[in-house]
Image (spheres, rainbow, N blue to C red):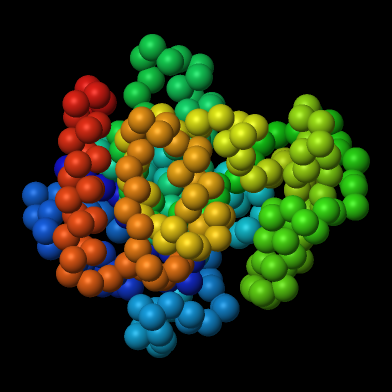
Length: 274
């Protein structure tokens, strides 16, 4: 089994290898490939794990305020899977889990929909650790009309937080607007592309492969529950830990996670996805 691994925002491959070493040691017949982000991270070290690597360069995968960069990053992951694969699964933590989910959704909506009988997904199963709710970036049919942002909406708050927190992201031409085809739904746009947060109540089950969701049940819904709701419940398993948004740890947790990763991969085999 080959699994592509994406670290969290404000991390790097060395940190993520350390975080995952416990369960990887119990999956010796699996191959884990780590891909490091290229977006500099400036917000400091908050995690128990990243504090131990305070002198290391920390990275994310995409510029939150550049929609073209998000699209390009998603495409780079798909291209990597095509050129360096085949991969059986994809595994991500925090922003890495978000990127993994966005790649799966992009492929399902844009590629599989064009040829559902012959196209096979780039990954047959996914492992999400504390996965933040994915967003979708799409072309807008005409120049959107700006609106006053609704600061009760999670995407608006996330946008404002990103602008304030990371000066390396620079200025942005994004502005809030109404969705062109879904009344009452808001998006961020640069006039050419739009971005909106996915919502299972409006978008349905966008991920239709076996998934494992490792998350803290008492954490905010945006850090795992909303992503779980976007997946087919018949194909989704959950493992709950007590570490909020930090990475789970401890021998018993690593053993339980390793067992569920193997179980998720075997379920994909049973569904003839390999």
